[in-house]
Image 1 (cartoon, helix red, strand yellow):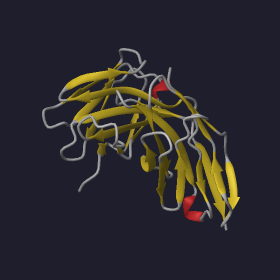
Image 2 (spheres, one colour):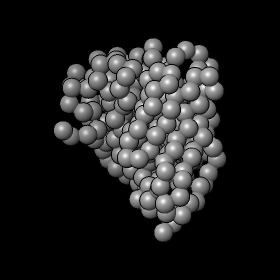
Image 3 (tube, one colour):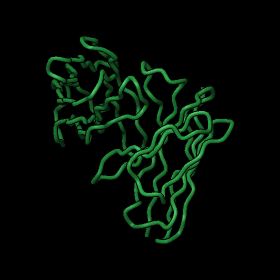
Image 4 (cartoon, chains in turn cyan, red):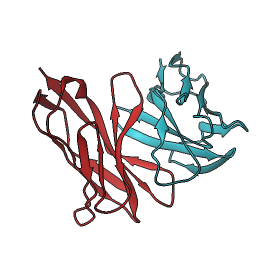
Length: 114
Length: 112
């Protein structure tokens, strides 16, 4: 079956702009999580959505937001981009709530802010 | 709180050498433990997992045992190959939640 699909793969934006990233989970997966990966901070949790509701949120400013649609696809938005937002953004999906299953990660969107 | 500490890299080994990457954790509850691998330009791939104490996860020759008494989940492989070159992440997830806590990653390079 198809894996987690993230689009676009690469993105270059200017400071002050906003950006929207997309994640399509594995079919049947209802939980989608987002992570930011940077060389300095490593992998940091942004938020998790389940059935269109944000279930958990990491310690990021309000410029970072997300949503999930009824088909479980998710988007994250970053407004007023800063240079420090340059990172690999990873999306992961999981089946219903089971702690016995690892998440499946997408290949990520590489965002560069200039 | 929850956190994962893994050995600093980079690690460089010759082909067929023995690999150990240390990982220890701190958790408020009873977590599941994971090793993920990231190849250049790619996302994370689940390598192996263990969901309770004394469980051993294994995959592709890699093994890790969930040691509650030492709060550790060290990754081992008896004979590494060039194709094992990647960054390895240790992670935990509380059984009551869905958030992962990752270590900082250990870069492994295997030379022929």
